[in-house]
Length: 160
Image (cartoon, rainbow, N blue to C red; front, side, top):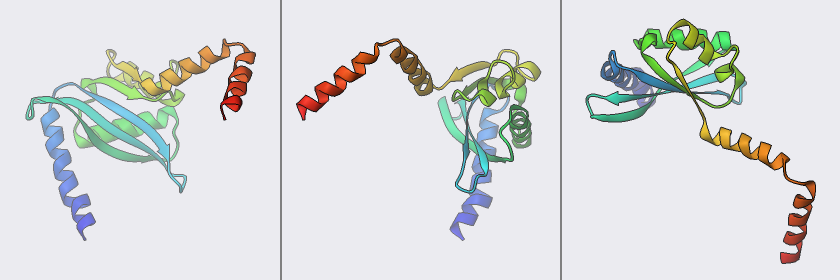
C-alpha cells in the first residue's frame, strides 16, 4: 500500500515540481544503461540543473526507462520521447554524461551524436572519469616490459 502511494502519488508530484524548477533553463543528463537479472534493458537518467528554488546545482534522479534494445537509434527514441513526455525541452539540453559505451557516446552514430545533430549542436559530452582513467591505465600498462609483472610477483612471494 505504501509503495503504491509513493509510486503513484508522491513520485509524480516530486517529478512535476522538479520539471517546474528546471523550467526553460539549461540542464544536463547523466545516463547509464543496465540489464537486470531478467535481461530487461533499462536506462537510468539523472538530471543536473541549477535550481532557482534552492539557489544551487542539484543532481536528481529523473527516471528509469525500459528499452527492448540498446542501439543508438532506440536509445535516442526512448530518451527523446521520455523527455518530451515529462516536459523537458530538448533544445535546452547542455551536457550528456555517460560511460564509454559506443551506443551512448560513440563518435559516428550514438545517442550523443543524434542529440547533437538533431536538437542541440552545442551539446557537450562528459565521459565517466573512472572509465577514462581505467582505459588510460590499461594502455599505459601495455608499454611496460613483461618482466616487470614477473618481478613484482616474485617480490610478493618473498614478503609472505
